[in-house]
Amino acid sequence: MIQDIKARILAGGEITEEEALALLTTPHKEELYQAAHEITEHFMGKAFDTCSIINAKSGNCPEDCKWCAQSAHYSTSAERYSVVSPSACVAQASYNRKQGIGRFSLVASGRRQTDREIDMMSISYRAIKRAHPELKCCASLGLLTEPQLKKLFDSGVTTYHCNVETSPSYFRELCTTHTQEDKEATLEAARRVGMRICCGGIIGMGETLEQRVELAFYVKRLKSYSIPINILQPITGTPLGNSTPLTEDEVLSAIAVFRMVNPRAFLRFSGGRAQLSPETQYKAIYVGINAAITGDLLTTIGRQAEDDMKMIEACGKVNTPEDWEVHYNY
Image (cartoon, rainbow, N blue to C red; front, side, top):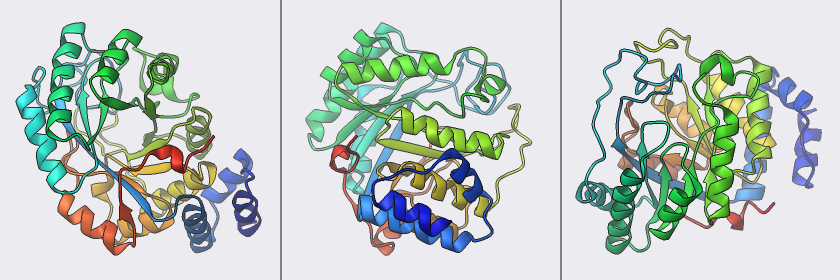
């Protein structure tokens, strides 16, 4: 079955949801991983996309997302502060650019930012682009309006990030203060002003295997060029704080299936990967990961950029912030 599915995808066909579910539980793990590797190499080559972020505003979020340390509904140790200065944003962007990272994003807590906050962040983006014209700028600032997104685009932001987090059938179990339709509206508004989108989710939040497959097909329908794959890192004080972590095979199988469903996407290692052994992280890149957020990640610690650059090189990948449409041509 695995070889038949691989051949169909390589020929331009697609996998079904039923087949994807069967692959998540196949005992032939190594065959699955090898098939996903060949699909990655065929459609994406050696390209690897790196990005880094600054937590531009932290904590006090009114949303009730059960996985998140920054929600005001839960008692956690997450820092709380307002929008950071343009000078701090430029300094962080410069630090990351010197380490070879090709993209930089401001990330902020909250349902959405006020117009004043967007004005402040636009100043930061313009300053970053003056200092590093070649640096690709991204943003992850919640459920923004189209005028706010246009202001960011005019300031140099070319990609907007908004995760759908989980499958449509499971989302309401994890968040009640906004909807995935709200997220989709933001992503469509970002597209209208000229941005690409970056949209993925979190695995290991108690979803069923069927719902994990549902998420893979959901982001495919949204036509995301970049799909962050976060692995839940249980945070004390949140409702998911006592969740059982996924096994490393469960993570690798999910990556393989996401690759087969989305053969032309950049699958981006994001939050939670520090829980994986170095060997598993290398294997994940072999299987299908071809992008990563590197450095410190919001409220959890990521992997230092220097180590990541060595890992990327050792895996035979080429770190380059390419235009994603070169690969992902819908």
